[in-house]
Length: 243
Image 1 (cartoon, rainbow, N blue to C red):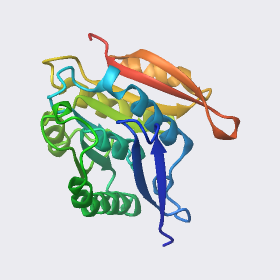
Image 2: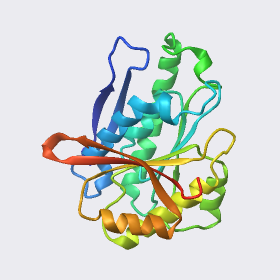
Image 3: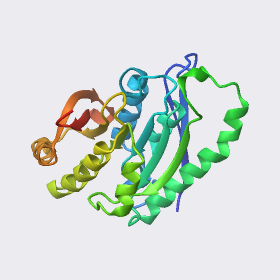
């Protein structure tokens, strides 16, 4: 195992919302989730830029709960925790290396938390009801068992996932079945839940749209970003069709 720690920064260091986070990665691992891919960087940047205007709950003092699907190195989740969200990172238990990496990320976050708390908090206390948190759970897409239902019923305002749209259509079906379960149980006081995902623009878009329709989901808005290596990354906001 070749563990590396990488630092990622978002925003201007002089701004209140500047974020610096550290990921734990294994570049030699076979599992894709042990490395940070371009879609994760784009999604983290998008969420950082639009968090307060588009995704955080309307009342600044309300807690915003976030679940990250296929967290891997957890870059988007780490950024949102730094912005004040209560984040649950999830990945499948069938890839022990990846889930172990998520556990290491949460452990490192907790170890650094006391040091962060000792510093003067850079954001006004009015912007969150209670301190942010970062925890992890295992979650296998498409298995709508009692454990998955119980997790969904805790209620998440925002679901995020980077590069979780790949493989075959049946993989999309499993992902969107889980996304629908989470969105159905999202808190409703202010706004319906939203699933924000980023993926490299590929010819598989048609099959994605087909799966969305099957599970009663729709794209609320799409963004397109140029990325490193000459690729294009799409960020889409997905909601229940009735929303």
